[in-house]
Length: 431
Image (cartoon, rainbow, N blue to C red; front, top):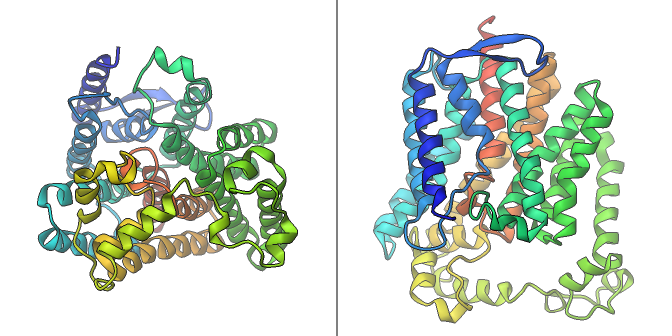
């Protein structure tokens, strides 16, 4: 059944191409389904692409269909940029992103494998291409709302397949892995929080918030639990500024209580489950107490081999994955380091790590300032969702392969950020 994914991939690709080449069509509105709007072909393609990031269409063996889908989407985004009525918006974070891409391209030349280096570069290219395309395609609040609601609907449909293992037997490989899906849900959880404050449908959006929070706790995915907490704290920081301190403290308190008093999380977090919060406060817990599933050992080995003595520039783009592919048995069969921060340091050094961090934090600041200064409710909603989800997803780079899942993970905050840029530019033009 997994080979049906080839058919699904071809169908969704052909539909996307057809949308791009079309004059558009009339669809139900995002704010009010009773009202119909005419969407251009570019707008239809945006809605389709943003809503289906969770669809991986993977094969268990043979053809790497996910990599092909990523490349095809990048090509279609470039086509969409050339067909869009408006030019893309180049903000400071996106200019820094280009500098980062240039740096990792240079890194491919002194890395051990040009082929794997290019694969890494392509994974980093997708978020910025999607963001630029969003800034050119989405100039209307209707399109923002429609694409966001569609993405949330697809994610909601995916949750039973996330939580009930045997259901995946009927659609093997259609949705992304559980860890990737859980990180995707961070952005849609924050979108639901934003909708709670910006719409009259309080109960509905509260339920959606809880729906997207629940999977990471049920599956005990520590990385997405952390990312969700950071995203909520970032949302509070943008919304309440200095008054956010009590809310952020509450998030930290809930996190501490979860770690030390929720048994499934505690069992996964520590080797010795007898440790207490008081032990932590007394300084009796160090990194040796935390169960990282041997990740810390792997990270130390990789950093010793590729980062030490290469701190500034790293060992070259693709160094970590080239080594892990060639030495699978050394890391229990793993071919990715489960930390994009470690991979950034090892591959591209402190320059790469700092540049990528600068992208995220300048984007967050741009979103925060837009929220504080703009009076348009929809743009403010998009800004606070983009900024909070950007930091939340960025936090997950600490202990997961977020860049590998960029179609499902990084696409969400960068998509929201691109839509904010597009709507803000249209407002500035008086549209």
